[in-house]
Length: 181
Image (cartoon, rainbow, N blue to C red; front, side, top):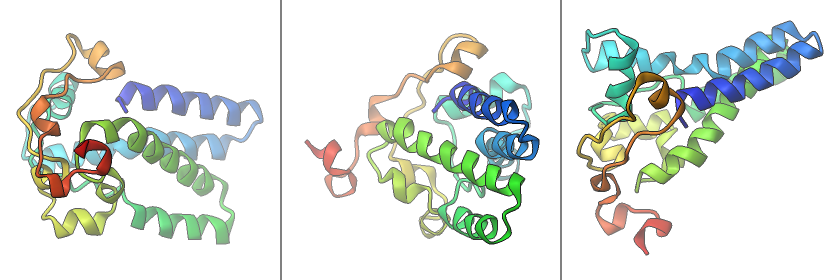
């Protein structure tokens, strides 16, 4: 899902929580639903070694498919299993919100980003799976040629990038059944 899509869905969830004066829940939802993407920024700078910190350059890097490695520590089933157990056992409201916002974020990613890759998008969100594949974006998401982002920052922020047809080309054994047909 686009960053703007995550922003809008998170804002709606936060507004509902705020309407019920659940401020800690709203804060957790905001961080889990939208703030979770800070790991993309960490990957961009620390893993990819990119130094152009302008929002447009950052967005183009991802929307045009330039990433070589996908560590994405916060986008992880394993992390959410631990956090969900902690939230369940502690009942800490902001943590419940974070887990709810983060799982909603991942669910939306599965729905919208699953169309963009011939590989298993469900497995992609396992940190252990990404680590086993060396965090190599091509191995995890399929070979791709860089596409072109939507014209203008805000259109790219709220829209989707053009998907290179090469993203959908992979060995038959790696493609999901819906992609093989």
